Structures are given as structure tokens and as C-alpha cells.
Length: 158
Image (tube, rainbow, N blue to C red; front, side, top):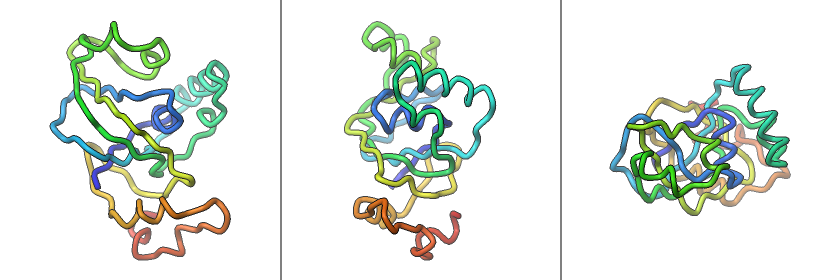
């Protein structure tokens, strides 16, 4: 399966349903189920902004989000120019994207947060993750799950 890394708090905002459009400076022809990965990078400006957003949206998960993990899956169904999206999206959606001209909005539907974010090394652009990893995620529960118990899937990515 393809995956895409988002910095925090944007990845968590997608996972919990506050954001359904990822804005980028580039378009893509890829469509379908995509894993949403939270990048490991977490700098002070993002932390401060995340704390404000958590309070504003009553979403504490945004203030202390997972890093370096797959947090959700969603269907990438369309890509549109940001100029074409601006008048059709909510203020909340606008707050989680860069809708300057000449950018692209990647529209996701059916985003589902994973019960437990899965440790995985991200990359720039699209990257592949093993399908077995998400099958495991679909069956896991919070109690007793340890990614180190799955060495074939996690060894190269912890």
C-alpha cells in the first residue's frame, strides 16, 4: 500500500476527522487507499500551534500526537487546485491547510484512525508499506500490542 507522511498536528487532524484535504505544492495521479503517516519531525512552532488547536477544537489528541507512526488510512479520491476549493470548504478545514494559489488539495474520504499508531519510518513523497502491516493494525487492540512482537514487519522500521 502507498503511504504519505504529514507533519503533526496535520496527521492527527486527518485521523480524528478535523481535516479531510491535504494541501501540497504538487499534484498526483495516485488514487485509492493510502496510509497516513505522522512524520517524526515535531518542532516548537508546530507544538505551540497544536496546543492552540487542541483547545480550540476540544481535541486533546492534537496536543500530544504520535510521531513516526502510521496513524490512519483513507481513500484519496480527487486532487483539485486550491483556488477551486477555497469557497467550498469550512473554516476548520482552511485552518489545517495551505490554500495559497497554485497549490493542490488532495481530497480524502473514509479516513479511519488506527486503534494504535504503528511505528514506521516515513519518507518524502509516496512510499510503500507492507499490506500485512495494515491487516495487523485492523486486528490489534490496545491491550498487549507490541510492534516488536512482529519482527518481520517492523524490524527495518523501528
